[in-house]
Every structure is written in structure tokens, then in C-alpha cells.
Amino acid sequence: MFVAGAGSYAHLHFDGDHRDTLLYQVFGRKRCVVIHPNQTHKLAPCFEPDIYRTSSWFLENFTREDQHEFLRFVQARECILEPGDTLYIPMMAWHYIEYPDPAMSIGFRLGRNDLVKTLARLNPMPSVFAQALALELADEARARARFPGPVERLGQAAARYAELTADDLPNVERFLGSMCEEICPRQARKVYTLSDLKFRRALSEDDHPRAGLEREGV
Image (tube, rainbow, N blue to C red; front, side):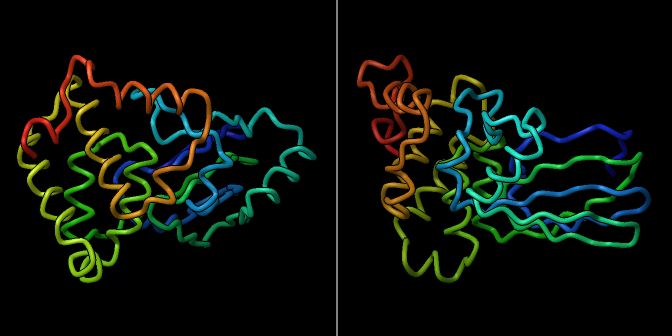
């Protein structure tokens, strides 16, 4: 359930539970912007663990004219939800919400297949690596047929990190980055921001204090 007063907003982000969502508007109006994950490279995603899955662009601070041009640049879809309307937000899609009125909506989170569920447990605050992987794993039968090795290693990693701690996150990100290289290399090799370069360099350093999953036998 989402309730807020006029002038409130939800910053540009994608959801961390890897689920498709139906957003039903109960009262008031809500302006919704949805952006496909294939536009992630234009959205300056954050690479600090506490704010993964958020954008460095603050649409709430744009002028209406600048916002219009930016949304056209990223091929966004937008609408005004009226009472009784329902919006479908696909898994891992970026979205931004504004409240022109006091309003309430209810989100219905849909189911996930076993592979996406495993990925979500392994990566509860997903970075762009997990975003790209989730889209490739959404068709479970296809993913198991095309990528049997990575799928098996995903299960092994999830078992190893059943009790995930903050110290494990660099290992998990390194592992997900290697999975991206195998499954969706074009996404894995895109560089988004200077903080992205710093993030990837830290993960690739051989003398990183936390060894990678590959060196630990996963």
C-alpha cells in the first residue's frame, strides 16, 4: 500500500524483489513514469551498496521542460493513474512516481520462477548486474537450456551464501559480474559512470581483501 500527500514523489529506481507488479489506484491521482531496463546505461545507476537500484538523476528536481526532453531521450512511458486504474510495471523496469493529489494505491506483487527467486535471495539489493541477469532468467526453461553451467553455479552460490552478510557482497557482485559476462556480455561490458569504473576496478583487484567466488571454488 502506498499513501502520500500532494507534492510527494518516489525517486527513479527499480524494485529489488525481481517481481512484476500491478499498481491499482484507490483514490487521488498519481503520475507514473516507466523506463525499460535496456535504457539503464542512460540513467546513471548508483554503485554504492546502500543505494543500488537507484538512479543518480533526480527527476524531481528537473524543470518540466527538461524532464520532458529527458524522458523522450530514455524512451519512457508515462501516464496519470486515476481511481480504478491499474498499471503494469514489468520486473526490473525503472519507475518514477509523482503525487499531484493526496493519493493511495495498492501494489500486487506477482510470482517469480525458481531461478529469479534464487537470484533475488542472493542479491537482495540488486545492482545492474542482477538487473540484467534477472531479465535473462525470466524464461526459466530457456535459461536452463542455454546456460546450464551458470544456472548450476547460481544455485551453488545461493547455498553458500544462505546467510548473506555485508562482507559477502563484494564476492556476490564479482560472481554476478562473471555470470553477466557469460549470459549477457553486451550488458556486462557497458560502463555507466565514473563510479561504475571505480566499482568494477575494486571488484577485479586480485589483492581485494575478500577473495572472489571463483577462487573459493564456487
